[in-house]
Amino acid sequence: MKDFTLKSIALQDVRVIRDPIHNYITIDNQVILDLIDTPQFQRLRRIKQLGGTSQAYPGGEHTRFSHSLGVYWIVVEMVSKSVIRNCISDYEFLCAMVAGLLHDLGHGPFSHSFEDIFGDNHELYTVRIIKECPQISRILDRISADMVEDVCRIIEKSHPNSILVSLVSSQLDADRMDYLLRDSYFTGVSYGQFDLARIIRCIRVKDNKLVYKHSGVQAIEDYILARYHMYWQVYFHPVGRSYEIILKSIFKRIKDLYSRNFDFGDIEYLLPFLNGTVTACDYTNLDEAVVLYYFHKFTTCDDAILSDLARRFLDRDLLGYIDIDSEDNAIVDNIKARQKIRGFDVDYYVGIDTQQAVLYHYYGDSHQIGEIEIVKNDRLVSFLEMSEIVGAIVNSKKNKEAHKIYFPK
Ligand code: CA
Image (cartoon, rainbow, N blue to C red; front, side, top):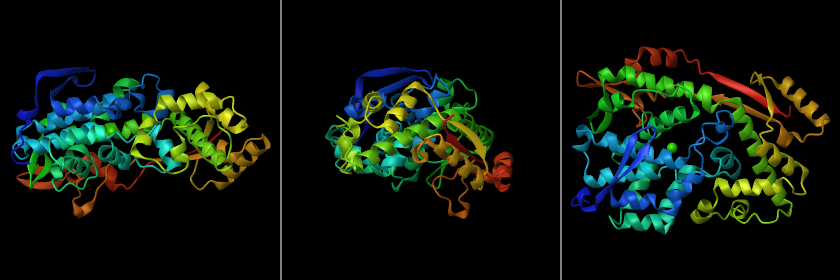
């Protein structure tokens, strides 16, 4: 694809989207514009970014649609820096933009609980949707017969050009940078804030890798701590987790009832997941609007457990919780026994949740793509060696963990 130029797909009328995080997101080429208009991408308007967390932070109602546009835009801003722009071709730039835009296509409704029960991996589905849905592959095929594969390899982290992979998935990638700023803005907390512009200004390329200038260490430190605090304050909020546990129990109950030939009425869009014949198209038929409609119907179904769980979910009648030590079997047994006496089936009404957020992954000498590297005196040094704060925490080997048990109040 040496002869491809971005100029050949440039829009006469550049489109501008107003965004609360990046102010203006610019679309200047036909491929990105066409991809945004596909039904698969528009579906992301019906998948919320934060799932259960919006139950704790009611402002957090934003969707994967605006997040995906934000990731696309951070990729554009990073690549537009001449240090990167000079080492990648127009075709590679386009592949990176597309990978950033489409990286979350495979998220299911209320993603994580859904994935846990139906065993689907959203990354795998993203790749399947890009390959199998003609509305998308057709747009990429117009540029090159290899483009579908090249975009998927960036998303799967197997692309030979590590710069492209690092832009979309590494410990300092466009995905994480957008979701931290966006989730922080919409939940109303101050934790996820960091200096995106400064980090982008410090990007360098060395040995064909994305690395950072020495003077950017504090900005990166701030970003890593921002992410760590967002995990403990927002993503692991017990109200959000309680909601996820009910959600998981609903999906589990549906699965269990299905194996006993329970009559659900119409659950057409869930059937492929229950009988294990999911196509990429089935996958995109399912969004949160459809699932919420089924939950409404379940509140009056003949199964007492499913109807109660669905009602709890819709009315935010969540489970209570207490903190436990991971080893605390006596307390767990005791709570289960008490809930049994109260008439609750503990398979659906008692859940144990373990939370662990790793501050920073250090891969040692293997120098994997996820590693953040700093250029100092023209030499590459691991970020961990350069950051006193992150280095001290990682070296202390204190990985903060929390365990909670959830049960009806
Ligand atoms: Ca994402």
